[in-house]
Amino acid sequence: MTDHGVSDSDMPNFPWQTRPEVRALDALLSGTYKPEEALAGLRPVAEVLVALQAPADRREVARWAESLIAYREMAGMPRRPSRSRPRRPRLIAATVGARLAAAAGVVVVAVLGSGIAAAYTGSLPVALQKIAHVTIAAPGVRESRAASAPKGAGHPEGPSASGSAAYGLCNAYQHAEEHGNASQRAVALRNLVDAAGGAGQVAAYCAEVQHHGAANPPGRRTDQTASPTHPTQGRKPTTSPANGNDGRSGNGNAHGKQS
Amino acid sequence: MIGEDFAAVLTAAQHGDEAAFGVLWHDGQPALLRYLRVIAPDVAEDIASETWTQVVRGLTRFRGNEQNWRAWLFTTARRRVIDQTRQLMRRPATSLEALPDLVLTELPGLRSPDAADLALENLDTRAAIAVIACLPPLQAEVIMLRVVAGLDTEMVARLLGRSPGAIRVAAHRGLRRLAGVLAEARVTQ
Image (cartoon, rainbow over all chains, first blue to last red; front, side):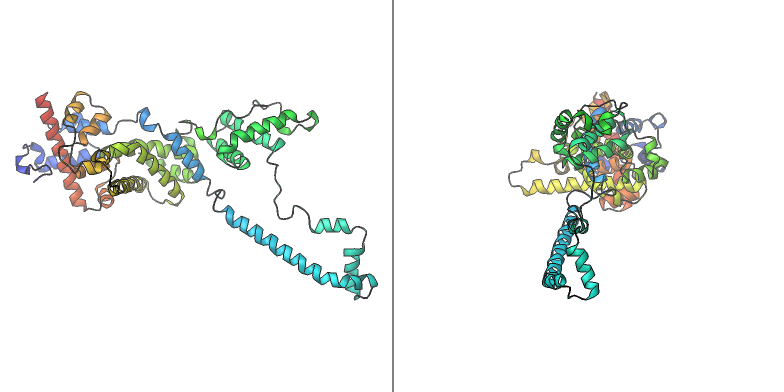
């Protein structure tokens, strides 16, 4: 019986139920059978199968931007940690490190505190006395302290997320959008999103940057703002990163060869 | 199908090359969407998008050739359809109309009888999908996976959890039935 309650014997008796026709069915399924070469009874079937494999129309690829955004969010993983999970261990490590440093400092102060008086009286052993002299009695003690415990210790130094560096990021993104390839656009976008603190913050971030740039005195212009070759100088990005770039990078030709 | 460039394209996409990902997407999306329009027409677009999101998440871990890639893509889509069907069936207030076609096609007589006529009159892709959707679900799905997804019998068998022999029989029966439906439509025109 067939699925709709009709027995196979009630089905029309088509000639391709013989062995050669079975081969023809296999050929249809594997796409090696052209409609014009098909047997008379199989020709309409072949035409339907060809129509099933027609090139994509515009509506079928309308959601490319959606997938591209998902890809941009996920594709960064091999090159950099994602925003949520891998940053947490780093934060924890930094916090633990800071606490350990603070605890060590307390111990050192406690131990040294009791010996300070002895140091001023010169009653410490020679080696310790020299250390105490350099550490607590030398005029340059403030500089020494500053050198041994800088304010920014443990924090990587990078461009400020505001002011001229931010202006540069916004400009670089704008330039990449207009003139760069897919890879350059992705890098520029990632840097900007990182600096802004999220894709949703980019517009506000760059708007604020524009404000700072206008307020900067002329003597403090940065390389980016001073560049005579920069075509987008003074403009904030007009393209939201969430818009993607429909179809522009979808043709993928030579890029596919990269490894 | 991408063909001999597939390995290079995949590698580039796994390293963040948007253009390479675009090649994979534009190659796979039309076939994926057409397949979903047969097995779950009401939610085809959404499930296709969800499928790509899920595929992107696992992209860097994927290893295999183009057949494996396509099998993974369609397997992911099929699982999404099954999950969604289960969710809808768990909801007590779900009406029949709200169920995806994967469920509706189990009920005879709910398919459009005019699909074959439509296909003959105007044989574009949508009409062809409509006429394939007239077939019993397994036959329709096997034909879509073989012809549109480009998977071989073994891959389809694994994807659907059936034997290769059962897949071959279902495909042949589907094509025969399709020939019958089209012949009938031609007669009544």
